[in-house]
Length: 189
Image (cartoon, rainbow, N blue to C red; front, side, top):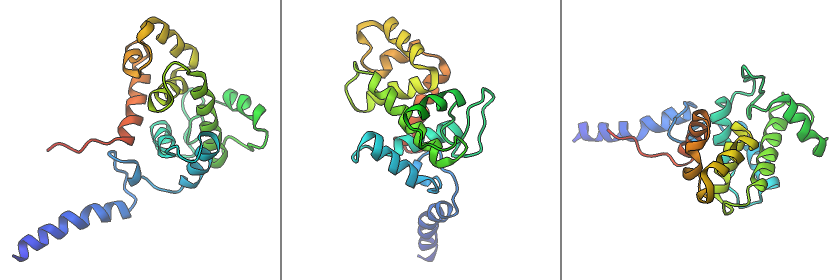
């Protein structure tokens, strides 16, 4: 009986200790550090309302930068949300109180604000996750490129899966990564 008890304790305590140690679990957003969660919660509430799940944008930041505030892409994107300096300039025209792109607070605020701008542009998909996928796709590939993809897809362009074949592979993987982080599937043994 002690062996069974030891095995049970190992199965219960091992996952808890790895989460407590801050290890990153690719199967769930909650296993990631919570250092910036306050920013994600605050700016999601401000730009998407109090009932919108802020973890979508944390998942996006994980997909963008691995939650590294010092991340820099080869293309020049900066910070947690990987925002291009020119895009940040556009964003700060409407939000002059956003101080600097290098500051995680303003980087998250700008990324969520920009998602809201893109979300509002998509009127065909109904509000909710489908429209959010289009916003994420636009964030990654550009609104114009995604608009072209919807035109190629035709009348069936109300669902992400119908438009995805017409967007770049990188964008399909990007949206899939965010979706996977939000809706992890159990690991198959």
